[in-house]
Length: 268
Image (cartoon, rainbow, N blue to C red; front, side, top):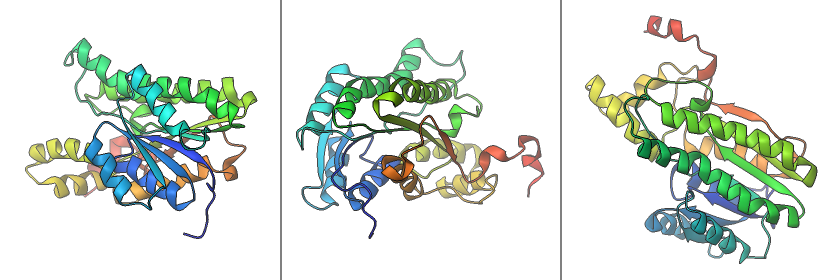
């Protein structure tokens, strides 16, 4: 890649050990950033780091819902040059169940990672972004934060909350040079999606690929996204090319959100 829009930028990316997060890490490194990668799984972090040029990344194992871990993540990112320019909140966990199906403990776990985690990361990162002269926060929500599939109350609520958290930050910290935007992907082929599609495969009496093919039928572009198709938008939002964009809710779903649900059963 010839374009290096993130040259000399320091970025911290949570959930960077797999899926969308790992794709964002790779794209940011290609565009010149030094990336602090955060994930709960040490082996995943090491695998991503080993695939990239030496010295281009720093790793930190931790859970974004743990305030002590979050402080350590920020300290780790600051060891590079004492600055932080970009924060990407990608870490998340999936969940299924309606209100009466899930326990308060499970509800708390999902919101802890998917919503409180980004809040804690932003709370610790924003003073350093301001000190570094301003910066960009990119939150990875979901189409599930705007549209509600069945039995996904905790996940959808957490992602809807993340959208509003993004907009609140845009309003409060825009005057201090902080831009905050949120991306809402639709179906993306990731390890987390694999888990959900494996459950669908059992219901459809097919395999994982068959389940992905089934959900792709209802997407206007006719396919499920690759993580690498989400990363370029993140690079744009992290760069100065998006210098006048904040508070934006960007849907990246192959057209899923515009489909009339009542007509889906008429296809094929």
